Image (cartoon, rainbow, N blue to C red; front, top):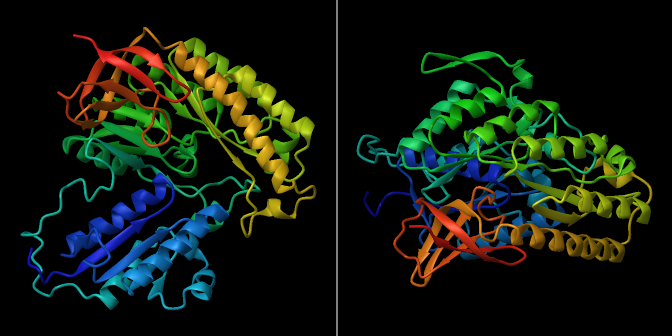
Length: 441
């Protein structure tokens, strides 16, 4: 490509689902001959893909827009926060364009308007790889299987931003997965707002992939993905009864034994106020059953403390659930009153100092559980996928660790690897978060 090609800078914020949106936009721009700049100075304009889930994410998005304006001056805004254009323009009136999530055509159209593509662009010369432009390392990739959500959790505004559940055709999902694997991806991270609901909106419609009939349903999708010979990891899975059908696939090795299940709370009264499934006893029974079928399963979850109406009794109930469930990986957040969330109108707002105190107590309990569970891994043999190789050793992850959010495995003085290699190791040490290991000859 010549130095005259138009150059676009890109800032991607928020969750993996937003990252996939960014990859789609970048792939389209690259297909049309735009060069992607890694610096503000080298870009003719900058696209900022925002997050609007909680107040801290909004603040980060607004700061990113301000930085892009100061460093470059020509800024296009998209993403979840862009769903309310007035909120953006009230603070940053000089942005060129604002669009909401999944509005790929509007983003590309705005780029065309303010930075026209080269008229002599030859797509047969400036080839884009079949898997598209990826923002993750080469050896793993997010695979988004649906948009939107049918739930109406009172703390969440995602349905108002991204709409109701909209499952992708199963053949399209499998085609993308195959392209990624062919390009060298060794780990597929399946994401959506509600992964376990995949296909519900299509009534599990029968689709086809490479002439093979397949239902648009999570079990069939997992079976097919597992046959591609790479790690398949599931994120954002509600504890529906249908998830029970996935656990045997983990025991068989088709899917890595890992579930990201956002439970949010444990007390039935709080879950009712959240409009979440409230049968926590059944959830605990289900978790125990999963462990019977697949003893190696690792369960990650997220929780909210300080939700409006949460009492000390409710919170102690949550801590008791933690001690019983002994989840492997847990994240916790204090309730954030996002604009437009129905929970903001509930009585019993919890003071900020109480929220923070509960968060600290929660994490103290969970840190002890996590440390104990990691200590139990010492002496065990397991597979590790390598993420980083440096002068002093390598860093990887077990099948029980997702990139960026979970723990790492440190292989000191082991440098004869490449990112994406899967190696067999023996665990030698552990702390609250990470493991240390040595390779097995």
